[in-house]
Amino acid sequence: MTTFWPFGAWLMARRSSLIDSAVLGLPEFDAGSVWLVGAGPGDPGLLSALALHALAHADLVVYDALVDPRILRLAQPGAVLEDAGKRGGRPSPSQPDISARLIRLAQAGNRVLRLKGGDPCVFGRGGEEALALAAATHRETNSAVTFLTGHDSDGEVPGALDWDAIARGAPVLVLYMASRNLPNIVRRLLAGGRRPDEPVAIVSKATTPTQSVLVSTLGEIAAAASGIQTPSIIVIGEVVRLRAALDWVGALAKQGG
Image (cartoon, rainbow, N blue to C red; front, side, top):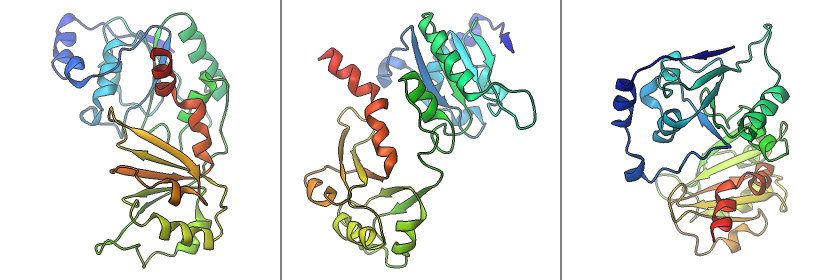
């Protein structure tokens, strides 16, 4: 179903006062591109600045069933709103159809906002849609994710955790504040059965202009990580292999350089 929201100039003025794209250094929403954006848990007040920026510039918004209608009302006047929501037991577009639709809309020169409820890359189809746009797919990559702290209140590896169970329990591990204890953590994970050739990524200063990413293996990451600046986050699992296909920021930087 496709609908149009008839809003006036007052809404544009009101929305433009919410964020200043130049001050925040937000990227241009180029024609012929697709932005994949999470709409959060529902309340419009929890939208990110990038989400508001995208809503203010998108020609088309392809949205899921869980996106709050109040968020859709923030789309720019004249933007086309296209319902791509999937509901169990009801007629719904298939995932291949949605991905193909996004590709066609972008190829037609539109600024396409793919708006999904929550975080589209946590148990959603966000990564799959992004990879479809890059001519790939990933449905079975991660069915569970475990988030861990890398140190306790004393700065040591958390001793109360069952590291053997953690090693076996989830295909993807995400470690916070783990740089100092990384060699010890790696030893525990390997002892618990994780493969030494499993891919690992350390993201330093994520989302900032000085972001850097080190990709290695679990068996070699502790030695390779010396000198990595904090704050950093560590991701362990096959999902790391998707970075090459989804690193559009890096690809654009290379083109510009």
